[in-house]
Each structure stands twice: as C-alpha cells, then as structure tokens.
Length: 608
Image 1 (cartoon, one colour):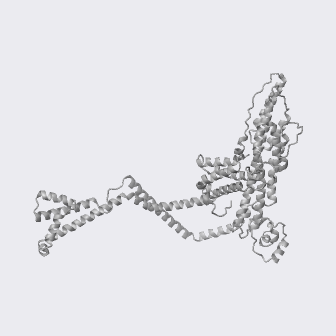
Image 2 (cartoon, rainbow, N blue to C red; image 1 turned 180 degrees about the vertical axis):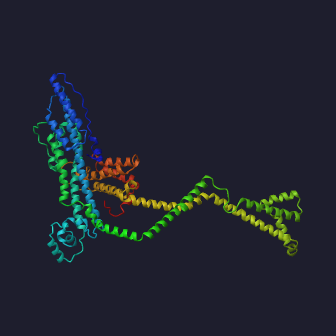
Image 3 (cartoon, rainbow, N blue to C red; image 1 turned 90 degrees about the horizontal axis):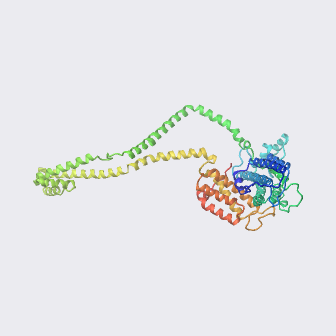
C-alpha cells in the first residue's frame, strides 16, 4: 500500500473525467441491452479498484477487461460511448495505482539501501567498532578477507569467504602469531559504497518515474496517449531506459488498452523487482549483521555478571537495607523540610501575610517613646517650671524628636558637673539622652523591619528555590534516561533532528552539484531542469523530511503546516533547480533556528 508521501505525490493524478450518460436513439433494443450489461460490468470493475491495489486485483481486472467485448461504436456526431469512457477510466486508474506502487517500491528500496549505508558509515566513523569477540561487523564480508587470515578468521570461521575445516583452522592457528585484528574501515567503506551505488540506481529510476508524472496526467486526459505512457513506465520499471524513450512502434493492437503492459508492470513491481532487490543485498552480504551477532558478547557476559551482582547484593543485604532506610529518611526529610513546609509558608504569606514585626514590635517602640516623654516632661516641670500649655508643646516636640530644652539644661549642668551630679540634674539629663538613643535605635530597627516585611514573599521563594532546582534537575535526568534512548524529545529528539539536518544538507548539495546520470536519455539535459538521478535523490531526502514533519512536529501548528508546504514545493517536479534552491534557503531561514540545525551538526555518530 503506497505511503502518505506517495499519496501526496500522485494527488494531481486523481481522475478528473466525469462519466456522463450518452444515449443513442437510433440503436436497437438488443444493442441497448447488450451495452447496459457491459456498462454494469465495467462499473463493477471500476468500483473494485477503490480497494488497495494488489497483483491479484490487477490480473483479475485485466482478465475481465479482456473478456468484455470491445464496442467502438461512435455516433454520427463523433461522441464516444459511455462504455469507452468507463474502459479508459479503468485503465487509467490501474495505471495510476501501478505508478503509485512503483514510486513507493523504488522509494522503499532506495531508503533501505541508504539506511544500511548510513549504518556502515557510522561504524566506519566509530573509533570503537572492534570489541572483544566481535571483530567488527565490517569483517563479515569484503575484499580484505583474503589478506587478513588472523584472529577474526581463525576464531570466527563463519566470517571467512571460504569455509575452513577444523584441521585447517588448527594449522592456521599453529602457524599464526595471532596478529591484532584488522581495521574495519576498508570493509565498512566497501559495503557503504556498494549500498550507495544501489541507492543511486533506485533513485535514478525513481527520478525517471517522477518525471513521468506529467505524461501520465496527459494520458489520463487524452486516452490515446495512454499506451505510450504505459510503454515508457514498463521499460523504466524493467531497467531499459533507452527503450523507454525510443519511439513506440505502430502495430495493429487487438485492443486499444495496454493490457499486456499492465500485466508486465504488475509482475515487475509486485514480484520480480522486490525479490531481486532483496536477493541482491543478501548475495553481496551488504545488510547489517543480525541483532544476535551484534550483542552476543553481551549475552555471553550478562548471566555471570548478573549472578555475581546478585550474590554480592545478598552478602551485603544488611548494609543495603540500612542504606535503603537512610536513603528513605533523607528523601522524606528533604521533601518535608525543604520542599513542602517552605511551600506552605509561601502559600500562607500570599493568602494572609503577617502584621507582626520581624525584629521589633510596635508596642515596644510605643512604650519607649512614652517613657522618654514622661522623663522629659518631668525634668522640664522641675527645672524650667513649665505650665500645662508649655508642657503640651514640649510633648509635641518630643514626639517629633526635638529635645532642645533638655539639651540646654544639660549644657548648663556640665559647667558645674560636681554640683549638678550631687543635686542629680546631670544624671537625669544623661538618662534622658540614653532613652532618646534607645528610641532612635528602635525606630531604625522598625524601618529595617518594614523593609524585610515588604520582601517576605521573595525570601520565602528564595528558601524553596534550591529544593525546586534539585527536583527539576532530578526529574529532567530521569526523563532523559527514560526517553532519550528512544529518540523522544522536543521535535523528535536530537537523533531525528540530526537526520533531518543531513537530509536538508544533501538536498542543497544535490541542487548545487548534480551527480552525473548513468543514462543520458530523457529529460533534464538543460541547466535549469533537474536530472533523474538528482530528482530521485531529492525525493529520497524529501520523503524523509515529510515523514519527520508528519510524525514529530506538533499538529495544527504554524511550524508543521509551513514545513509541509515547503516540503511540497521540493516534491513538485515542475519546479526547476533555481526555484528549489530558493525553497531550501527559505527552509534554512525559517526553520533552522527553531529546530536547532545550527548546533545539531556537532556530535558523534549515532547508530540505530
């Protein structure tokens, strides 16, 4: 079944012909009944093609079309009969379905070859591709086996291109000094290049098929051209590019429809081509080793390591239990003392707050001021003989901090300090000034207290912030360990974004320096158009971009919709090289910073 990318690519090929009823009043009743029966059969065939296309469905449809009698009766006005329109619609729908299957098949094969090539390239770049008992998956085949009969081939005879007998292995082991394992780079390079050649072959065929879309759309509108289009499609699918673009011989065909070509296409796409591709990869040993081959050292070492770990844990069960209890107590203390209680204080501060002072209380300040007032008024009444009105004015001055009268008395007393000390006036003045200093200190602390009260919520959050930071870091670390290996993250994670970055870079590189075609036939020979090989490689990269956007970008967002619109422009074979270069520049400008393409290139190889 074609993928969503192929469905989007062939969307312009949807049938636009409308089947209209055509009446022929001059026909006899028997002819009308015969045409009605034929029309019903053709309508049933057309309805059956709404199901996903398969090889058996194509064979059944072509067989039914062959059995139905062909009526080419044309009225005097030159109007084609409705049965002719139905037959043309069936053939067109078959051809479009096979075209979609061909695009999907070659795209899948090119994608598989590229995926394997990228895996071998990652192994080639990796510095630790050889491990104990694993002479590198690159050593499973390649041209260097005949020159390296050392450690890997002796102990892993299945890696040798020629089977070794037990005696031969013993003789080779006895005569060998067991050299160090060979470098896997030549093997990986050999496999990668072979896979890239296969990918380019499939991509070139894919490019020819993409360029065939306009011809197929024209053939749907003008059924007279459908045989030539089917001929080109069949030759391209069979790998005969030269024959595909050669003039079609004019012969007396038994039927106007290319039924034989449709059967050949079905056989090539559903059976022959897929089997040959898989056989090619397996015969050349280009596929990556099996999962068991890659992890068997781990499987070999895992049971004894697990047994040793379990035995050590059982021997230290008392200390482990004590450690678990301490860890639980620490976690509970952290959560309650540093997280929950400070958060409760924050909520309490936000809801109600507190009018109590942090350093001093308002009652204490008021008591100190009242004591200072009483001491001053008493001194003024005894020494200065103030009346009630003067005492009231002095009280107002004391509340404002003005003690001028007391200071004047103090200045007079210090002129004769001994006499003033004996009478007690000097001591009273000193004590009043001490009380005044105490009041000033209380008022200063009151100001500091107001400042602290205004920042009480800030201090509450500062107290809980370290605990929240620790929880955030622990939670992020746990989530990264849980989902990081699966490529899950924002916009698909770094691994998927790195793949999109590679696809974007290759797309721009293909548009700047186009690879040379193996077959110089067909379209795309001028400098403004895109050759088939470049077009196929572009479709390969664009398919990766579309799959990424549909799977990982947030749905119903400007990012996803805009990204898919740009991908649609790259998929359009009608756009030339310069137009697609502008699209690439727009994508780098619009989505590069959002998806982090500028920094994703820094990093090691990632194996899937």
